Amino acid sequence: MSHFQYNIHHQDPATAARRGVFTTPHGRVQTPGFMPVGTQATVKGLTIDQVAATGAEMILGNTYHLALRPGHETVRRLGGLHGMTLWQGPILTDSGGFQIFSLEGIREVSEQQATFRSHIDGAIIQLTPEHSIEIQESLGSDVAMVLDHVVALPAEPDAVVDAMERSIRWAKRCLNAATRDDQARFAIVQGGLDAKLRAECATELSSLAFEGFAIGGLSVGEPPEEMYRITAATCPHLPTDKPRYLMGVGTPIDLLENIARGIDLFDCVMPTRNGRNAMAFTDRGQIKIRNAVHREDTRPLDPDCHCVACRHSRGYLRHLFIAKEMLGPILLSIHNLTYYQRIMAEARAAIELGRFSEYVAKKKKGWLSQPTTNAETRG
Ligand SMILES: [Zn+2]
Image (cartoon, rainbow, N blue to C red; front, side, top):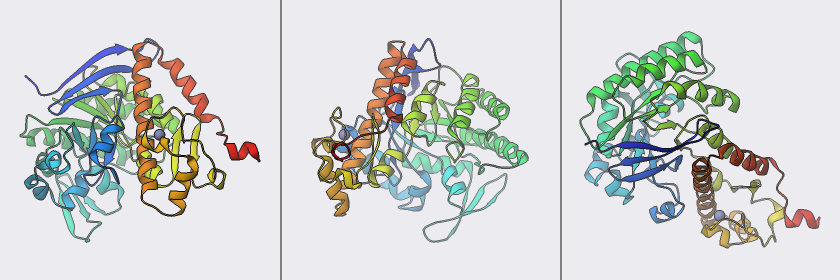
């Protein structure tokens, strides 16, 4: 019996939103679900208990970063990502593709491999699809992503087609190289902003024995409507009985818009990165906690949030950032991750009730409203 299963429990009647459960060797993931990003085998600034307390069930690690430092052999000898971090739940690792193509260290892409320069010591490194899988097997993640060829958008049509076709050939090589049956492989659909290419790529990959499918190469600066258009054009060509993962997305609105188009899993640095930069997500839009209006604001970030940050006043949180105390970024990271998990939980409940569109409309109304503060109303 397979270590991996994906079961859909509810299908929203008015949209393509699905409510499911993804079963892995390290436990189950409720979908739609959001994975916090632990680039260097740590969700920046947070202990694993704090990450778990936000409601996260599955986290992400970055193959590129971990292969360069401390090295995947070292990770393996320290017990893999699970042994090293003590995270008990499922872990997904990316393939390194996005980083080597986006960090501008890329030197050359041939049919055999990608050659790039390490951002740490400048060393020339070659990554093949087979090596990417070997590294991820050493890391011991539950889900390994295939190595794909990502092109920066906008790109010439020929370059997009070439990268898409190479990504399919590399996906097959990844499947052939895999040796662990306790690790799932997810394929990655490429094809830029061309709906026809995306459909073609999705159809081709769907014929292969992958446990899940991702949409890559989006959230790279294109307008949100373009991203939604591509998601909508891709999902109908993916198997209905496998999880669909939209890589690197996004804002709270992006999450809901893409769930409505059939996406099950997300990851993004936004909640933690914005948290470190003193920005908090709430139902009434974003709060920039460094702003002077919060100086003596006694209210929490969000009265409906049960996270540890929301036991404090906005005035205290602002003070922590102004005083450059490390607790400020930690607390706002916790709040934002908790907020993202709450959106996912609410979305799941709305799909179960068959009222997802209604839910999305309500959330958007709040997010697009202008947040007011005590200080502002006091003048
Ligand atoms: Zn909170």
